[in-house]
Length: 253
Image (cartoon, rainbow, N blue to C red; front, side):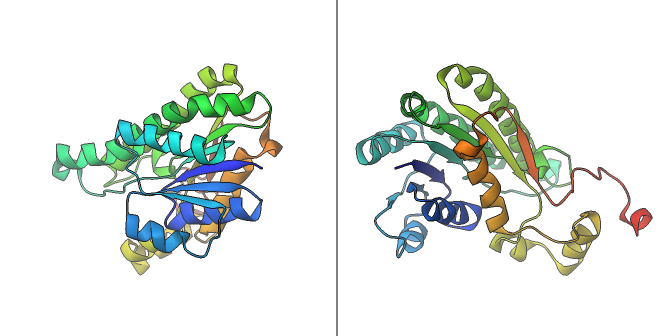
């Protein structure tokens, strides 16, 4: 039976990805720092999930996650580095504390989890599919206002993915990255005003936000044996947002 580790698994894209893996017959280790939210999300998902209330930005906890997965599952086919922190504000108002908080989870946590899980993934890769899928953002592919820490962290995740593909490929581990565009998550609904949503709709060729399930489908494809010869790729699941660059919506309408 295949198994996966999903960080940031208690909500949003992480929870949707967990459910997609379960539907496909995987066992899933759900990693989340918020213990209460994790317990709530894991309840009702059955015996195929392993809830792990851990903080991926702490090196010793990343190692503990890897140990728990090895002990419980014996192998790991997919590591989904989804956990992330969003922080929006002007550069001049972004304190070093805010900067480090974003980097510690979005970049450091992704690095630490990949490093901790590498031995188990490499062992699995000898006989089965093994891969890492990092979750970046369209904000890591194109700049935007108020995203100095968030966008920079996600751009670094993109480069980290390429480094992993180059080095881990020799171990049989694939590494790819999904960069979601605007997605209908609770966070987006909370912080995007009607004016912002309308502007995004105008800027997207598909004229709508994506769904959590659509992003999960892209993630699970890249993690699956169906993508066995795909590594080092950055997939923008963004409704065409990156494709139109900085083109003015008014000129297209």
